[in-house]
Amino acid sequence: MTASSSPTSPLSQHEQVVFCHDKTTGLRAIIGIYSTALGPALGGTRFYPYASEQAALDDVLRLSRGMAYKNAVAGLDLGGGKAVIIGDPNTDKTPELLRAYGRFVESLGGRYVTACDVGTYVADMDIVSETTRWATGRSEAKGGAGDSSVLTAYGVFQGQRACAQHLWGKPTLAGRTVGIAGVGKVGRILTGHLLEDGARVIVTDVNDKAVADLTATYPQVEVAADTTALVRADLDVFAPCALGGALDDTTVEALTASVVCGGANNQLVTEGEGGTADRLRERGITYAPDFLVNAGGVIQVSDELHGFDFERAKKGAAAIFDHTLEVLETADARGITPAAAADRIAEERMAAAQAGGIWLPAR
Image (tube, rainbow, N blue to C red; front, side, top):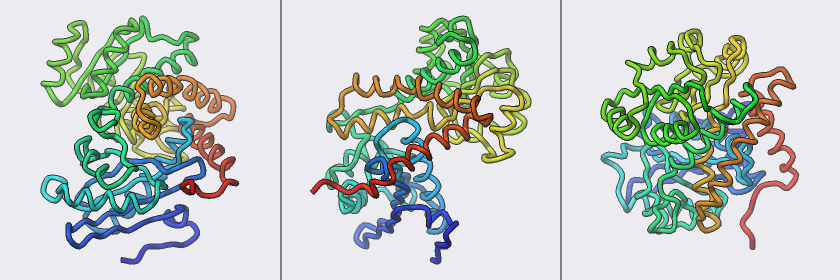
Protein backbone atom coordinates (compact mmCIF):
# COMPACT_ATOMS: atom_id res chain seq x y z
CA MET A 1 0.00 0.00 0.00
CA THR A 2 1.20 3.49 -0.79
CA ALA A 3 -0.08 6.27 1.46
CA SER A 4 0.30 9.90 0.45
CA SER A 5 2.34 11.93 2.93
CA SER A 6 2.51 15.29 1.18
CA PRO A 7 2.38 18.36 3.48
CA THR A 8 -1.34 18.77 2.78
CA SER A 9 -2.37 15.11 3.13
CA PRO A 10 -4.36 13.93 6.18
CA LEU A 11 -1.51 11.59 7.11
CA SER A 12 0.97 14.47 7.39
CA GLN A 13 -1.26 16.24 9.94
CA HIS A 14 -1.14 13.35 12.43
CA GLU A 15 1.44 12.93 15.19
CA GLN A 16 1.63 9.18 14.80
CA VAL A 17 0.01 6.36 12.84
CA VAL A 18 0.70 2.79 13.88
CA PHE A 19 0.02 -0.28 11.74
CA CYS A 20 -0.52 -3.42 13.83
CA HIS A 21 -0.31 -7.02 12.63
CA ASP A 22 -0.36 -10.20 14.70
CA LYS A 23 0.16 -13.32 12.59
CA THR A 24 -1.10 -15.76 15.22
CA THR A 25 -4.55 -14.19 15.61
CA GLY A 26 -4.84 -12.55 12.19
CA LEU A 27 -5.16 -9.09 13.75
CA ARG A 28 -4.82 -6.20 11.34
CA ALA A 29 -5.34 -2.81 12.95
CA ILE A 30 -4.38 0.83 12.56
CA ILE A 31 -4.08 3.31 15.42
CA GLY A 32 -4.17 6.99 14.51
CA ILE A 33 -3.04 9.68 16.94
CA TYR A 34 -3.96 13.12 15.61
CA SER A 35 -2.78 15.22 18.55
CA THR A 36 -1.61 14.85 22.14
CA ALA A 37 -1.14 18.58 22.71
CA LEU A 38 -3.78 18.49 25.45
CA GLY A 39 -2.98 15.03 26.81
CA PRO A 40 -3.24 11.34 25.89
CA ALA A 41 -5.22 10.67 22.72
CA LEU A 42 -8.61 9.16 23.59
CA GLY A 43 -10.89 7.56 21.02
CA GLY A 44 -12.72 4.32 20.35
CA THR A 45 -11.83 1.22 18.38
CA ARG A 46 -13.93 0.51 15.29
CA PHE A 47 -14.13 -3.13 14.11
CA TYR A 48 -15.25 -3.07 10.48
CA PRO A 49 -14.78 -5.11 7.25
CA TYR A 50 -13.05 -2.41 5.22
CA ALA A 51 -12.71 -3.07 1.50
CA SER A 52 -9.01 -2.24 1.62
CA GLU A 53 -6.24 -1.16 3.96
CA GLN A 54 -6.33 2.27 2.32
CA ALA A 55 -10.04 2.59 3.16
CA ALA A 56 -9.26 1.67 6.76
CA LEU A 57 -6.45 4.23 6.88
CA ASP A 58 -8.67 6.96 5.44
CA ASP A 59 -11.29 6.23 8.09
CA VAL A 60 -8.91 6.19 11.05
CA LEU A 61 -7.33 9.47 9.96
CA ARG A 62 -10.74 11.14 9.65
CA LEU A 63 -12.04 9.72 12.92
CA SER A 64 -8.94 10.50 14.99
CA ARG A 65 -8.95 14.11 13.83
CA GLY A 66 -12.62 14.35 14.79
CA MET A 67 -11.86 13.02 18.26
CA ALA A 68 -9.14 15.63 18.78
CA TYR A 69 -11.63 18.40 18.03
CA LYS A 70 -14.35 16.75 20.10
CA ASN A 71 -12.17 16.38 23.19
CA ALA A 72 -10.73 19.89 22.84
CA VAL A 73 -14.05 21.70 22.47
CA ALA A 74 -15.46 19.66 25.37
CA GLY A 75 -12.74 21.11 27.58
CA LEU A 76 -11.06 17.76 28.23
CA ASP A 77 -7.34 17.56 28.85
CA LEU A 78 -7.13 14.82 26.25
CA GLY A 79 -5.88 14.58 22.72
CA GLY A 80 -7.59 12.79 19.87
CA GLY A 81 -7.04 9.32 18.51
CA LYS A 82 -8.92 6.43 17.00
CA ALA A 83 -8.26 2.86 16.00
CA VAL A 84 -9.72 0.49 13.45
CA ILE A 85 -9.54 -3.29 13.35
CA ILE A 86 -9.96 -4.62 9.84
CA GLY A 87 -12.41 -7.52 9.69
CA ASP A 88 -15.97 -8.64 10.26
CA PRO A 89 -16.73 -8.37 13.98
CA ASN A 90 -19.34 -11.12 13.64
CA THR A 91 -16.87 -13.70 12.34
CA ASP A 92 -13.31 -12.45 12.94
CA LYS A 93 -13.52 -11.19 16.51
CA THR A 94 -11.98 -13.54 19.07
CA PRO A 95 -10.70 -13.05 22.63
CA GLU A 96 -7.19 -13.87 21.42
CA LEU A 97 -7.37 -11.19 18.71
CA LEU A 98 -8.64 -8.59 21.19
CA ARG A 99 -5.84 -9.43 23.62
CA ALA A 100 -3.31 -9.07 20.81
CA TYR A 101 -4.80 -5.70 19.98
CA GLY A 102 -4.52 -4.72 23.66
CA ARG A 103 -0.81 -5.48 23.57
CA PHE A 104 -0.33 -3.02 20.71
CA VAL A 105 -2.26 -0.35 22.63
CA GLU A 106 -0.09 -1.05 25.69
CA SER A 107 3.07 -0.67 23.59
CA LEU A 108 2.24 3.03 23.13
CA GLY A 109 2.65 3.63 26.85
CA GLY A 110 -0.62 5.51 27.34
CA ARG A 111 -0.29 7.89 24.39
CA TYR A 112 -3.45 6.26 23.03
CA VAL A 113 -6.43 5.34 25.22
CA THR A 114 -9.11 3.21 23.60
CA ALA A 115 -12.84 2.69 24.14
CA CYS A 116 -15.88 1.24 22.33
CA ASP A 117 -16.99 2.24 18.85
CA VAL A 118 -18.85 0.59 15.95
CA GLY A 119 -18.36 -3.16 16.18
CA THR A 120 -16.89 -3.15 19.70
CA TYR A 121 -18.70 -3.30 23.02
CA VAL A 122 -18.18 -3.15 26.77
CA ALA A 123 -17.46 -6.89 26.90
CA ASP A 124 -14.75 -6.42 24.25
CA MET A 125 -13.10 -3.64 26.26
CA ASP A 126 -13.07 -5.94 29.27
CA ILE A 127 -11.00 -8.41 27.22
CA VAL A 128 -8.74 -5.71 25.75
CA SER A 129 -8.09 -4.48 29.29
CA GLU A 130 -6.53 -7.85 30.13
CA THR A 131 -3.44 -6.84 28.15
CA THR A 132 -3.44 -3.04 28.47
CA ARG A 133 -3.99 -0.44 31.15
CA TRP A 134 -5.33 1.94 28.52
CA ALA A 135 -8.80 0.56 27.76
CA THR A 136 -11.87 2.51 28.89
CA GLY A 137 -15.56 1.80 28.38
CA ARG A 138 -15.19 -1.31 30.54
CA SER A 139 -17.98 -2.90 32.55
CA GLU A 140 -18.68 -1.77 36.08
CA ALA A 141 -17.48 -5.19 37.28
CA LYS A 142 -14.09 -4.37 35.74
CA GLY A 143 -13.96 -0.91 37.30
CA GLY A 144 -15.37 0.85 34.26
CA ALA A 145 -18.20 3.26 33.55
CA GLY A 146 -20.54 0.79 31.90
CA ASP A 147 -23.14 2.12 29.47
CA SER A 148 -21.93 5.52 28.20
CA SER A 149 -25.34 6.39 26.70
CA VAL A 150 -26.45 7.67 30.12
CA LEU A 151 -24.21 10.73 30.08
CA THR A 152 -24.35 11.03 26.29
CA ALA A 153 -28.08 11.73 26.61
CA TYR A 154 -27.54 13.99 29.61
CA GLY A 155 -24.99 16.02 27.64
CA VAL A 156 -27.35 16.40 24.67
CA PHE A 157 -30.01 17.65 27.07
CA GLN A 158 -27.54 20.22 28.44
CA GLY A 159 -26.81 21.31 24.86
CA GLN A 160 -30.54 21.77 24.24
CA ARG A 161 -30.86 23.83 27.42
CA ALA A 162 -28.00 26.03 26.23
CA CYS A 163 -29.70 26.54 22.87
CA ALA A 164 -32.90 27.52 24.68
CA GLN A 165 -30.95 30.00 26.82
CA HIS A 166 -29.26 31.46 23.75
CA LEU A 167 -32.39 31.70 21.62
CA TRP A 168 -35.26 32.20 24.07
CA GLY A 169 -33.55 33.58 27.16
CA LYS A 170 -34.28 30.69 29.53
CA PRO A 171 -32.34 27.42 30.00
CA THR A 172 -35.39 25.19 29.81
CA LEU A 173 -37.44 23.28 27.24
CA ALA A 174 -40.62 23.68 29.26
CA GLY A 175 -43.51 24.41 26.92
CA ARG A 176 -41.38 23.65 23.85
CA THR A 177 -41.92 20.82 21.37
CA VAL A 178 -38.95 18.54 20.73
CA GLY A 179 -38.86 15.97 17.95
CA ILE A 180 -36.51 13.02 18.48
CA ALA A 181 -35.52 10.89 15.48
CA GLY A 182 -34.25 7.62 16.95
CA VAL A 183 -35.24 6.39 20.40
CA GLY A 184 -32.62 3.75 21.07
CA LYS A 185 -30.54 4.15 24.20
CA VAL A 186 -29.65 7.84 23.89
CA GLY A 187 -33.00 8.96 22.47
CA ARG A 188 -34.89 7.03 25.13
CA ILE A 189 -32.95 8.57 28.03
CA LEU A 190 -33.15 12.02 26.43
CA THR A 191 -36.93 11.67 26.29
CA GLY A 192 -37.05 11.24 30.06
CA HIS A 193 -34.96 14.37 30.66
CA LEU A 194 -37.17 16.43 28.35
CA LEU A 195 -40.46 15.27 29.85
CA GLU A 196 -39.15 15.98 33.34
CA ASP A 197 -38.26 19.49 32.13
CA GLY A 198 -41.81 20.04 30.89
CA ALA A 199 -41.34 19.61 27.13
CA ARG A 200 -43.76 18.07 24.67
CA VAL A 201 -42.00 15.20 22.87
CA ILE A 202 -42.71 13.67 19.46
CA VAL A 203 -40.64 10.67 18.34
CA THR A 204 -40.02 8.33 15.46
CA ASP A 205 -37.83 5.28 14.91
CA VAL A 206 -37.49 2.61 12.23
CA ASN A 207 -37.64 0.09 15.07
CA ASP A 208 -41.30 -0.25 16.04
CA LYS A 209 -40.39 -2.09 19.24
CA ALA A 210 -38.21 0.81 20.43
CA VAL A 211 -41.18 3.14 19.98
CA ALA A 212 -43.57 0.72 21.69
CA ASP A 213 -41.24 0.32 24.65
CA LEU A 214 -40.85 4.07 24.97
CA THR A 215 -44.56 4.86 24.84
CA ALA A 216 -45.27 2.09 27.35
CA THR A 217 -43.00 3.95 29.78
CA TYR A 218 -44.05 7.45 28.70
CA PRO A 219 -47.62 7.29 27.33
CA GLN A 220 -47.70 11.09 26.88
CA VAL A 221 -45.09 10.86 24.09
CA GLU A 222 -46.50 11.39 20.59
CA VAL A 223 -45.39 9.31 17.60
CA ALA A 224 -44.75 10.56 14.06
CA ALA A 225 -45.20 8.21 11.10
CA ASP A 226 -41.58 8.58 9.99
CA THR A 227 -38.65 11.01 10.00
CA THR A 228 -40.08 13.01 7.09
CA ALA A 229 -43.31 13.56 9.02
CA LEU A 230 -41.37 14.45 12.16
CA VAL A 231 -39.21 17.02 10.37
CA ARG A 232 -42.34 18.67 8.95
CA ALA A 233 -44.15 18.69 12.30
CA ASP A 234 -44.45 21.92 14.27
CA LEU A 235 -41.25 21.67 16.33
CA ASP A 236 -39.09 24.00 18.35
CA VAL A 237 -36.16 21.56 18.51
CA PHE A 238 -35.19 18.72 16.18
CA ALA A 239 -32.98 16.08 17.81
CA PRO A 240 -31.39 13.55 15.42
CA CYS A 241 -30.38 10.60 17.61
CA ALA A 242 -30.03 7.77 15.08
CA LEU A 243 -27.62 7.36 12.17
CA GLY A 244 -25.39 10.03 10.67
CA GLY A 245 -26.27 12.12 7.65
CA ALA A 246 -29.54 13.32 9.19
CA LEU A 247 -29.23 16.83 7.78
CA ASP A 248 -29.28 16.87 3.99
CA ASP A 249 -30.56 19.71 1.81
CA THR A 250 -34.10 18.29 1.65
CA THR A 251 -34.34 17.94 5.42
CA VAL A 252 -32.96 21.42 6.08
CA GLU A 253 -35.45 22.96 3.67
CA ALA A 254 -38.36 21.13 5.33
CA LEU A 255 -37.41 21.83 8.94
CA THR A 256 -39.83 23.89 11.01
CA ALA A 257 -37.64 23.75 14.13
CA SER A 258 -35.61 26.73 15.31
CA VAL A 259 -32.93 24.48 16.84
CA VAL A 260 -31.14 21.30 15.77
CA CYS A 261 -29.47 19.56 18.69
CA GLY A 262 -29.19 15.78 18.88
CA GLY A 263 -26.96 12.88 19.77
CA ALA A 264 -26.28 11.36 16.33
CA ASN A 265 -22.74 11.57 14.96
CA ASN A 266 -21.84 13.22 11.63
CA GLN A 267 -25.22 14.89 11.15
CA LEU A 268 -24.14 17.28 8.38
CA VAL A 269 -24.18 15.64 4.94
CA THR A 270 -21.86 18.30 3.51
CA GLU A 271 -19.26 20.12 5.61
CA GLY A 272 -17.14 23.20 5.11
CA GLU A 273 -17.93 26.43 3.31
CA GLY A 274 -21.23 26.30 1.44
CA GLY A 275 -22.22 23.10 3.24
CA THR A 276 -25.17 22.11 5.38
CA ALA A 277 -24.13 24.29 8.34
CA ASP A 278 -24.23 27.38 6.11
CA ARG A 279 -27.68 26.44 4.84
CA LEU A 280 -28.97 26.03 8.41
CA ARG A 281 -27.59 29.47 9.28
CA GLU A 282 -29.19 31.00 6.19
CA ARG A 283 -32.54 29.61 7.31
CA GLY A 284 -32.08 31.03 10.81
CA ILE A 285 -31.82 27.61 12.43
CA THR A 286 -29.50 27.31 15.44
CA TYR A 287 -27.30 24.22 15.06
CA ALA A 288 -25.51 22.77 18.07
CA PRO A 289 -22.50 20.82 16.69
CA ASP A 290 -23.04 17.11 17.27
CA PHE A 291 -19.46 16.40 18.33
CA LEU A 292 -19.88 18.95 21.12
CA VAL A 293 -23.26 18.02 22.56
CA ASN A 294 -22.79 14.24 22.34
CA ALA A 295 -19.45 14.39 24.19
CA GLY A 296 -21.02 13.13 27.42
CA GLY A 297 -20.08 9.57 26.52
CA VAL A 298 -16.42 10.51 26.06
CA ILE A 299 -16.49 12.44 29.33
CA GLN A 300 -17.97 9.37 31.04
CA VAL A 301 -15.39 6.88 29.81
CA SER A 302 -12.48 9.29 30.25
CA ASP A 303 -13.30 9.49 33.94
CA GLU A 304 -12.18 5.85 34.20
CA LEU A 305 -8.61 7.12 33.90
CA HIS A 306 -9.02 8.59 37.39
CA GLY A 307 -10.99 5.72 38.95
CA PHE A 308 -14.58 6.07 37.76
CA ASP A 309 -16.89 8.28 39.81
CA PHE A 310 -20.32 8.81 38.24
CA GLU A 311 -21.10 12.10 39.99
CA ARG A 312 -17.76 13.57 38.94
CA ALA A 313 -18.37 12.44 35.34
CA LYS A 314 -21.90 13.86 35.42
CA LYS A 315 -20.51 17.20 36.57
CA GLY A 316 -18.17 17.12 33.57
CA ALA A 317 -21.06 16.37 31.21
CA ALA A 318 -23.09 19.21 32.74
CA ALA A 319 -20.37 21.58 31.49
CA ILE A 320 -21.60 20.88 27.94
CA PHE A 321 -24.17 23.60 28.72
CA ASP A 322 -21.42 26.21 29.13
CA HIS A 323 -19.37 24.93 26.18
CA THR A 324 -22.43 25.05 23.91
CA LEU A 325 -23.21 28.60 24.97
CA GLU A 326 -19.59 29.55 24.24
CA VAL A 327 -19.81 28.08 20.74
CA LEU A 328 -23.12 29.81 19.94
CA GLU A 329 -21.92 33.16 21.27
CA THR A 330 -18.63 32.85 19.37
CA ALA A 331 -20.54 32.05 16.17
CA ASP A 332 -22.68 35.17 16.56
CA ALA A 333 -19.71 37.39 17.43
CA ARG A 334 -17.63 36.22 14.48
CA GLY A 335 -20.47 35.93 11.98
CA ILE A 336 -19.79 32.24 11.33
CA THR A 337 -21.67 28.99 11.78
CA PRO A 338 -21.62 27.18 15.14
CA ALA A 339 -19.82 24.30 13.41
CA ALA A 340 -17.02 26.63 12.31
CA ALA A 341 -16.96 28.27 15.75
CA ALA A 342 -16.57 24.91 17.47
CA ASP A 343 -13.69 24.04 15.14
CA ARG A 344 -11.94 27.32 15.83
CA ILE A 345 -12.30 27.01 19.61
CA ALA A 346 -10.85 23.48 19.43
CA GLU A 347 -8.00 24.60 17.15
CA GLU A 348 -7.16 27.55 19.39
CA ARG A 349 -7.11 25.36 22.49
CA MET A 350 -4.83 22.80 20.85
CA ALA A 351 -2.55 25.50 19.44
CA ALA A 352 -2.23 27.16 22.85
CA ALA A 353 -1.06 23.86 24.34
CA GLN A 354 1.18 22.90 21.43
CA ALA A 355 4.25 24.54 22.97
CA GLY A 356 4.42 21.66 25.40
CA GLY A 357 5.07 19.24 22.54
CA ILE A 358 3.69 15.74 22.33
CA TRP A 359 2.38 13.93 25.39
CA LEU A 360 4.71 11.35 26.89
CA PRO A 361 4.08 9.06 29.87
CA ALA A 362 5.63 10.11 33.18
CA ARG A 363 8.99 8.49 33.80
